[in-house]
Amino acid sequence: MIGNLAWILPLLLPLIWAVYSYNRLVRDKNRVLAAWSDIGVQLKRRSDLIPKLVEAVQAYSGYERSVLEDMTRLRTDSDAEPNPSGKADLEAGITDQIKSLIAVAEAYPDLKADSQYLHLLHQLTDVENHIQFARRYYNGSVQNLNVRIDSFPDLLIARTFRFQHAEFFELESATEALPPDIGT
Image (cartoon, rainbow, N blue to C red; front, side, top):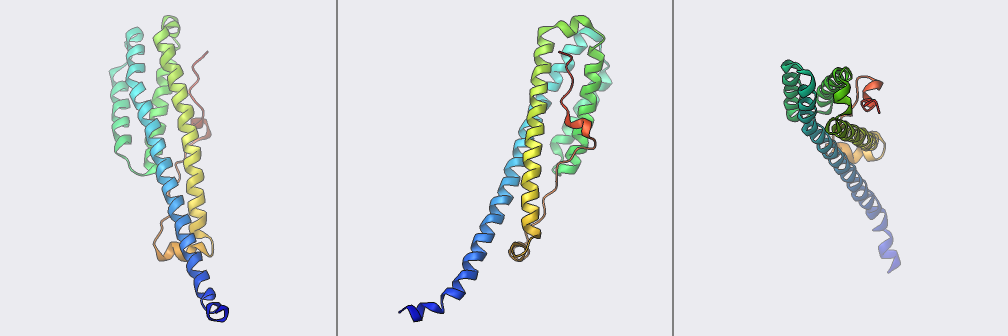
């Protein structure tokens, strides 16, 4: 009986390895998709805070309408952008606009003391921290998937089933990784 099964084992081991390898690739691919979804949620939260922050600053400073329009355009473009690199570029523009908005607010002591404005800034800082954490997790997931796709023997399965490399969500500069300074 054992002699009859001995010839099956060498055939089964590669099949078991192939199924195991395929399942790990699928798991890593799904982690990347879930992590990208988490980034999207955080970017949406930030997007929802921006108009409230602009309104608070406008009430004190008569802040330029063009800045609000630019931020709205960037938000719309970012929401429509499916690629991490394109979204990162647009989000960098939004970050620059937020920094500009906060810089204008610094000139108005009454605004800096306004509880609604301070609450919005704290929420924004919290969201920026969540975006940073989500970005870090996403990029780690992308790295795991990409390494597995490029590593032997998993690359045999990855190529057979046409697994694609995922794109990192990178910042243009290290200062963009920092949450905005809210002066408290």
